[in-house]
Image 1 (cartoon, rainbow, N blue to C red):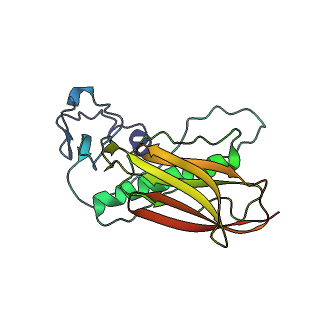
Image 2: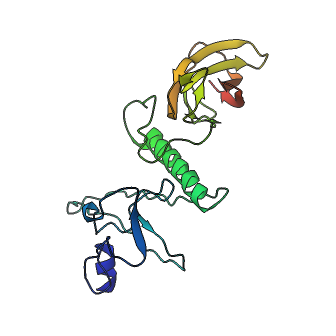
Length: 223
């Protein structure tokens, strides 16, 4: 019964917490504590220090659950669960790293198990990226389409909010074969689906350039 109470956002005895006076946390960032959902313990963002934040360190134990599901008799379903861990330069930065990994996990799931096209930019439900990044394309090797993922932090380049981004494809001799992006982009995580119908099998490189940031990765086209 105690476990059921915890899973429903209650205390061990079944009482409802009061975020305004709960000993182990505070409500920060100008948020009205009476408006905080008491069933979602410590639902604030510790990185930005906004909302209901746990304040006392200690040995923490968590119960992880999912649901509720509407099931049909004799009809099997598949449940997919991802446990995501991130290690950054400190405790708070580790949260940001884990959030980026969470976005990656969702992207990989969407690319393999959902129908429809991949959008050019994800909804930033968690936090904006903290740095420029270029990720390995997937799938790789591929034929004929692959997805290239990159991140743009919230910076100002050349007096314009965001960044002028160039994403180009080169063959193994260094010849440019395609320009995928050449425009200003706001901060966010981006996924770009690229199809190489008119190119021969082989090794290609994709390069992201934004201000002084330059990064190149290799991909393989197999037909």
